Length: 201
Image 1 (cartoon, one colour):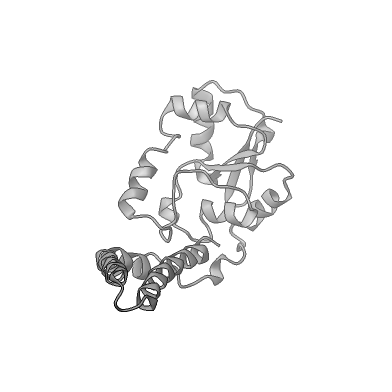
Image 2 (cartoon, rainbow, N blue to C red):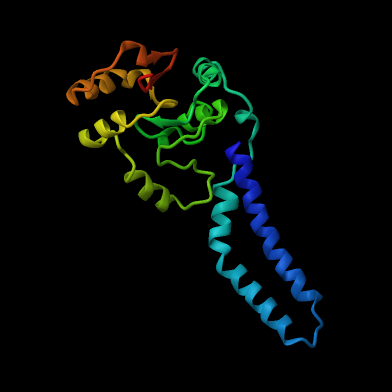
């Protein structure tokens, strides 16, 4: 559960601040180290206020129930991935940014299936800034360039899959054809709302 992990991470950081603060108070009052520790802690705390407000108010998920299990929209593809014996990595054809961290998103499908998702996108609750996410995202859109697309398909290893929405299948196949990549129809598996392209066995 990415959202729950992220909240735990944030509260762990808060706990570190409080622990340092407690150490400062526990040191004898006449110790010069106490003033240094307390001054440093308070200074760091004040400097981090803008980031803390963003992290705790705007980038924390308060609703975990929707991530417990997949709904009917993605259940069939999740079931297939769970049953796969060899599963190493899941790539998304197009990014997951518009879906954010919803139960219908690529990253959530990977999470349910227990397979790493490598698409250069971090859900909005992750411990990163929006600007950094956008910058990272723009450098990982491998499907836009014909060369990087062909390289990605050719380098697929057993257990690696490319996930796409069904309405993107036509574009995906067109890119395969333009890159002159031969593939077996069984490599492109269609589900109710999504499709999977897997490496050659």
